[in-house]
Length: 151
Image 1: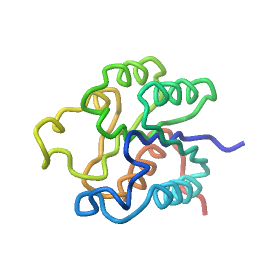
Image 2: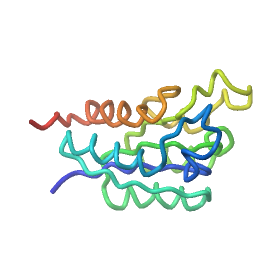
Image 3: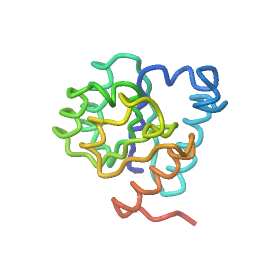
């Protein structure tokens, strides 16, 4: 049975492709989910992609990942990265290897985006690679958990 990686996207990521394309590009959330599914499959993993604009629902997704024995989480918490101690605490509680992803380079943007609570609960954080950051995150997670690329 394939192992599952949860790919969690937070507020406004459902608007990828429409929202500020000069910052986030033209790729859509469907493009992200397709990229994640393809990348995960290369490592014999399954990507369970979810999106919510609500903090509590994202926390529930993290709890679901634990309950379903997911091997990892890829998290783009969007603006909640910079504000949510609750998301940080949920990640710490479940102890699932997590990679934080941001489509844009948060360190080259407004100062309030420079701090991430969720990054402190992740073993790695990627930003500024566009949606390719998700591919890099899954590849890095696969290496962390010992999943090898399938032939």
